[in-house]
Length: 261
Image (cartoon, rainbow, N blue to C red; front, side):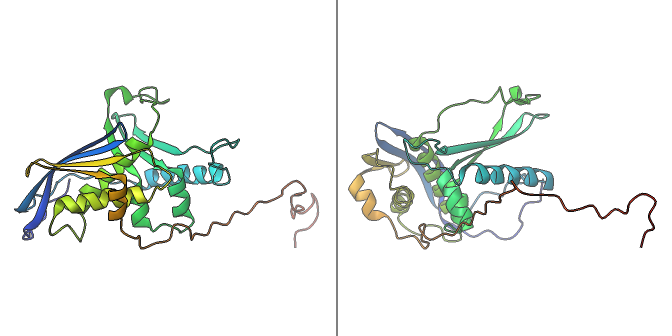
């Protein structure tokens, strides 16, 4: 728990009251309720933080992914083939609480090779907290749901995460036309994954204003902004060591009975 911020809060141009979204039949749909000119709610007095042990073990998982898959092709039909998506679940099995992270492996590779800035990469990971009684004492993850990660669900979650961040945490929140700001967020996100083409439309519905807008694939592409980074420029150096002829150094321990220097 932490004390609330007692500083005077400023009126925000828009506040995101609710947000929902899904992908179905080649269409992204997002319903949102945006309240204009309101004072932000009191800050949450409970937050999450990770201790050093958690951070160290989590980093070992990322390092293992890097060592195992960064030299494996992701092209379809190539054998062996690296996974497209990776899900990391770290659970406190004494309390039944876990963090679940879903990532696109190519995004992680770009981040590790300095092609993506840290702030951008974190927006491409989808994180959620799971609370489930069945996780208590579950050392082998049997209580987890093992389902396929689809492109539609992954991009829907990422767009929703970016919308929430833009309206509630960003230093540059929308000051006008929230509907257009959400459309641009969707367009930018989809432009980062040009290989995903299995969609035809993006549908937006403003609950409070009772306005709807259906964008075609061409229209949504035209809204995309040019990113401030170049994902094709990165550097990743892999060094392979040949230990087949490795011999341990000769012992420097003095022979039994000899005088030590």
